Image (cartoon, rainbow, N blue to C red; front, side, top):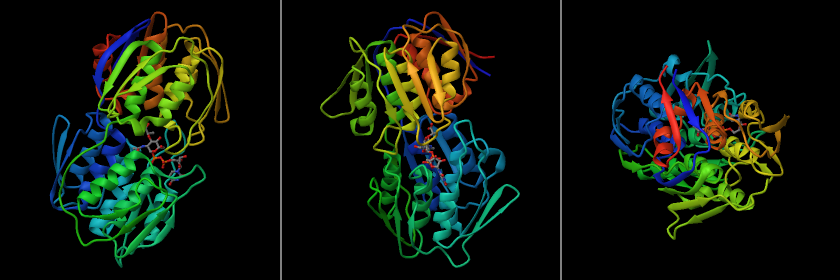
Length: 422
Ligand code: EPZ
């Protein structure tokens, strides 16, 4: 297993390009199952999560070719069963359920396990697909879906106790585009990645209105065609490097961003006293540390609120920002795995029932730390860049799930980081 060695007191400066969005790519790759024509999808980041998805599509019978960021998928003849040994590795593989059911009238996908950020139920996905007329039988850890009378449009409210569901909205949308009649999704997720999937489906010939709002209307069509599509920039990678730029930078510029997708992240950076400047087009941003940054409070919320996927990175920033900050994760209340490791580096954080009380300290000290999940691991890299001395981050495969060549990008910005293959 590789480890990353991050040398502290780095000063990041210069410009990098942000990759395509992992969380937009995953459902869009699955949506290529909805047509028997070839699809070209561009700017798919080369991370293990997207590569798992490509393996699943191949196992389902699709022809898949990748050359750097461009993927060609031709799902001419496919089978309904996704292989357990691949599905169990990545929760997002559940977003093949909707397309398989829509295309084949049946699907068999293993129940995704939980993960360190919390229990990952799929009840809302099942509620949506049942609403369209699917029969669901859970047997031996697998979910067997059949639609003996085909899928028929319906009106479904998809809200759960933690709010809307991103992949649940995706699955229902992908099943509904080939269903008979009209489907209305109430309490739909509004994340930019959901809008990107809707745009991909519309380009394929789907009839979808309201993506990006809480109410999405889908009118089923007979079939969909192959398309050539470019996914949106990764707003979480961009946000992560914006935090790097204020923690350990002196002028970091990011190309290929989308200002509208970064509004909540930008708001908190400004509130904390840092400098954030977008160009006119909003596709380039430069960040600089403020003169006297102050702690601030953060509560995660569904888009357009503050993203839970940025919570760990901001906890690392607040750990070295003077003042007391309260960070609450309403979406994944257990998502504070980074805090124990940050405390090993000298952070002063108390975690209690979905909230972290962070008291800023003057500095952190480098230490061997353990990556645990994707965003917590990114937070440890940020802390290592700011800390005194050397930080060794073990189990780097967690970071490689969602950050494309993170070490190369840090080196490009002048940071001192090395990947050690073990
Ligand atoms: C997506 O996961 C993202 N993953 C996650 O990013 C992100 O943290 C999450 O949305 C929230 O924004 C991808 O897009 C691949 P949810 P998803 O269904 O769709 C509960 C990362 O770091 N819920 O929106 O699986 C759930 O427990 C990853 O890139 C139900 O109760 O998340 C959570 O509390 C991590 N029942 C809340 O809803 C369900 O059937 C939101 O989850 C489904 C979800």
